[in-house]
Image (cartoon, rainbow, N blue to C red; front, top):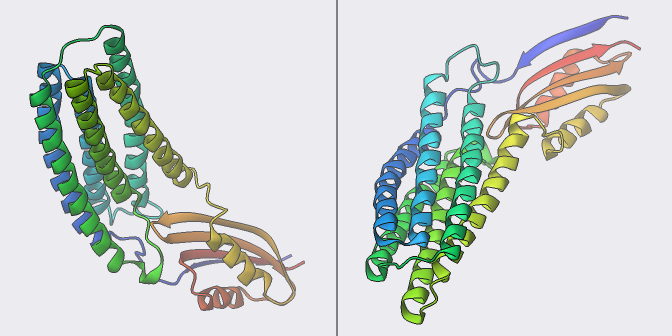
Length: 307
């Protein structure tokens, strides 16, 4: 039995260097991080000062986001700095995914703390300075909207000069965007809670919104955790590209596909190893078939063994 091993890259030698779109994303995430940090300090201080649980929840929520968005900016910077580091077999794409994963874990911790704090307030209500708290929450909301617009605008630019029509998933930018949107939502909840308590004497509304805010944080964090974990664990053999590649290989004459592995190496790029058994097929035939299929695969290792 003879077997042919063949290494193959049909892109230039460094198919995974840092992409231009990410530089813009990095700038905007950094901007948003500083804006968020400043607002969060104000909200936490105001929440403590004016005694509003909803405002405090909003502020802590923002702190978790400032951290997460900071992680996103850090991930972009690290990916860029290490883009030419040869010790990463397939580039630094997963740094960004790891940052998304870390920020999701952190968010779940924050959600738990928010629930505990709110339950304490439900048991032992405290008086709230409504006018000031509402003013701060409204400012928080406006700032969140501005941040969302910055990221969304960049995100669209990001989509445009990217990946020749392959849908581009930047989990990192998505994480930052989700953080900003949850922030806006908890700001709205805080405003509703404060107004209800202020005008209708529904004092329990403030801590209840603290809990609702926490649940929202946890739900979104869970989704992000699952998404980023899937990439980190290479659990992506159910991606459509796998079946497309399998289809290309199965269509080859007089050959059997013995083994196929596909894993993600970039936001819209995959690598693969394929082992086929065939009496007549050459390795080069297999590569040609794969190339003609124009799949988002940057790197394929093919092995053909004789039956």
